[in-house]
Amino acid sequence: MIDDLKYASMAEAFINGVQKAKQENKDKLVTYTMECESQPLQFYRNSEKLKMDFRHFWSDPEGVTLVGVGSTLDLTADGHSRFDSIQTRWLAFLKEHQISIEHAGTGPVLMGGFSFNPVLTAAEEWTNYPAAAMVLPQFLLTQRENKAWLTVNKRVTPKDDPKALIATIEEQKNMLLADRTDEEGYFQTHQDLQVTALFPTEWKASVQKAVDKMKAGELEKIVLSRALRVKKEGSLNIPALLYRLKQQQPNSFVFAIERFGDAFVGATPERLVKREGTKFYADALAGTASRGGTQAEDEALGQGLLNDKKNRQEHQFVVKMIKDDFEAFCDKVIIPDRPVLYKTRDVQHLYTPIYGHGKPDAHLLDAISKIHPTPAMGGTPKEKAVALISELESHERGWYSAPVGWIDSNGNGEFSVAIRSGLIRGNEARLFAGCGIVSDSSPTEEFKETEMKFRPMLNALKEE
Ligand SMILES: C=C(O[C@H]1C=CC=C(C(=O)O)[C@@H]1O)C(=O)O
Ligand SMILES: [Mg+2]
Image (cartoon, rainbow, N blue to C red; front, side):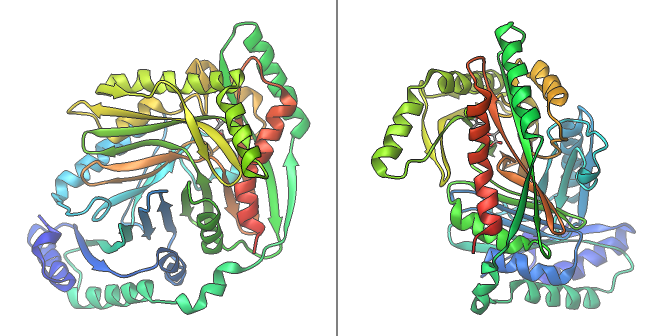
């Protein structure tokens, strides 16, 4: 057993870890958490020097930021049991290493996500993103309430020389925590873009097809998404993109999942589910209007949205399904009886917060497997909508509109749905945006709505 709370220093933790590995003649995990000072985005940028295959960034609108660098464990899975498979292996891993932590989101934390569908088509662009991929970073920076911690998670073997190991980790740690605030200009690099819409005419025709099916009573709601191809001279700078997303979208979850050189990045306003002990929280966020140019216009648009029959219906499907799904693992569910507005820089949404008191055995990944995809991403009825999405959309969704987030060794954590997002490979990005179609939808209006939802990524990619 290696318990970070027992060690006065990182060196001591590693010396003991290697000793245990020798005694038991098997690899052991050493996890050591220390308070530190850091700027998360500088940490992310500094990590470039380590040239690791994995980097993860997460920040929520309430001020919790996690940055993961490298991988000590990469749990992947596919198929319908993918959530269960990750959970089972994570619990087994924790049992083997008997970890205890002092602060949520420190120590061993899995970061990553899932694809929209349990099985991906053979779309080349998503090669590095399996149907489930949760990574235990080697270095994790956790920031909350103006405090920051650095966790080192490393496997040690019976053959390791603790002194050499400690020297390398110290060096890497100092490099990651180096203060480079004097180089703020780095994040401001300007990027000129070439933007191409993929299959816009076909998309509107698909919306019409879906509306016809709804009028014929085949289903009640479906979310259809579009893709844009964006190109830039020279490669896209991921830390700079994250910096701008954070500046421009303070009410959103800003995330990046980098795997083997590709980056899946976004700024989503929508939480899927968060767990804090027995408390479970979800968002129903669906129904959209634009922001006004003046305060009066903005308020009028907001009021219009609150009173709009089509948007209220679109929203209600989401509230209803999350409520039903929460009731399966919660013994109490609290939901306000009408939505309020949730505003981001580019749009305003109808928003209903959902709270559930979890049953004693309720797990975060079980909750996700129940509620994903909500009708804000999939539709109603769920299976029918998901099947029709595959039939009507011209692209593979990959991780777009799927759960991304983190889970710690106590089972606490948070996942958002990866909308307002894009997959970046070298100097090209594929951006995604979708909207909820109900029987009253108009293809032209829905198209305009997707244009608004592309803005967060487009602005962050190009603005100075
Ligand atoms: C599917 C997306 O948005 C969802 C979330 C909020 C509002 C939505 C809407 O009004 O249609 C969508 O359901 C997206 O941005 O790609
Ligand atoms: Mg909508």
